[in-house]
Amino acid sequence: MAKGNGYDVLWLGPDEWLVRSDAAVQAGVLEAKLAPAFGEAYAAAVDVGSGYTVVEIDGARTRELLSRGCPLDLHPNLLKEGQCAQSVFFKASIVLIPVGGDRFEIVVRRSFADYFCRIMLDATASLAS
Image (cartoon, rainbow, N blue to C red; front, side, top):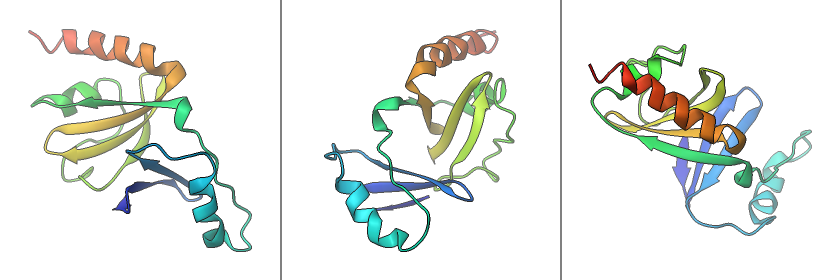
């Protein structure tokens, strides 16, 4: 993951990147900025911002909670701040972004957001005891 000029660039896979901004960006602006970098490559920049939501969680047992529905090894030595990983939380596709300590930003498709939050609450129930 790289940060700068108001953008976060997340490497999701060999040929897939997610560029996000914490400020509103007019349609087409980011695409126009990226076009020269594509050169002759077969590539496209597509605005998918309205299709995703971000959930932020924090707490001493965050990794334990996430491990209930995520198959990745979430040990802090393996998934660190400045990295990201695509995975699932039960049946919801997610992008995990450790942002420091036990805090994570989780990018989830908007159509799965309600399911994600409900299954997250269910997963916390067994941690309460």
